[in-house]
Length: 375
Image 1 (cartoon, helix red, strand yellow):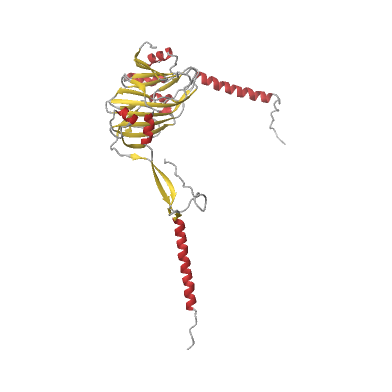
Image 2 (tube, rainbow, N blue to C red; image 1 turned 90 degrees about the vertical axis):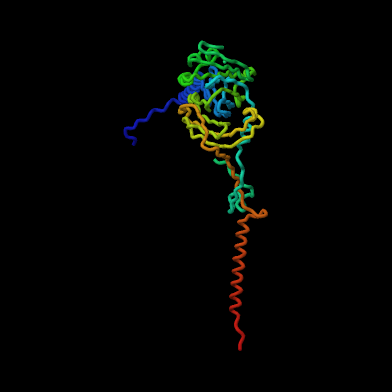
């Protein structure tokens, strides 16, 4: 008995598949239209603006800062995922900047410099991969944790590889918007407001048009690094524009200065983590960047799970002390002597001692039970 519950009559068997097809098609169409009318941009330093009907994201950015107290150099390398054949990258800078291609070998040298130290850590008792539980393999531990618009002055323009670089002065964000539109790009919603603080401080912009020379090629993978050089009496890494990023951001930052440096705050991201601190020799690409002068290198890693929380630019200051730091990776290894596990020698030796003691007791009892000869 079903009481007052009413059952809905079954749908026509031929209508249900048709309805599902229409729902799926509608969802796909909505996603496609969304990608056309809302091009994404994301960049840890500056703002990346793709062409119309294109999508782009910069999931990871590796940057190097060299600062001698008067002049700052920024070397940036982006890893890009996109279907765009062209894009514009806007970078605010506190003074007149020069732009050129950087030496990609710089990043390899720095990665080598901060490589963790490997140490062995021995353990006594056998583990899952040791005999008699498994193989004799060593258990390696993981590491611990571009036309000119009214109001915009083009102070320089050059072609650098796949980059068309324009160095601009702008009195207001609307002027920058006009320049972008004349060059085929649209200023993303909300970015104008984020540019206001830079306009108030009379900063300038470096605008880069990314366009591969190969016809039809898209911007994908790791791009050639760019080096910006400008006067600055404070060490600053512009991050404010990245608050418009649509996806989480991660930043690897190498800071070269006279002392160990530290951010004044987390600016809305996770706490920055120091992965290396110490002096580095001015050789190779690193020496060419610093002019052959020795530097103290501070390597930082920081994640921005919610970029919209970014509330300023990174300002870095000298730490209280130039305390060196290097990560240590431990490789766990079973303690052995001449290839024999120490635990086995210990257990075997203890077993032998116990056996000898037991045998001695038995023999002692036997001697004590021998009857005395008759008198």
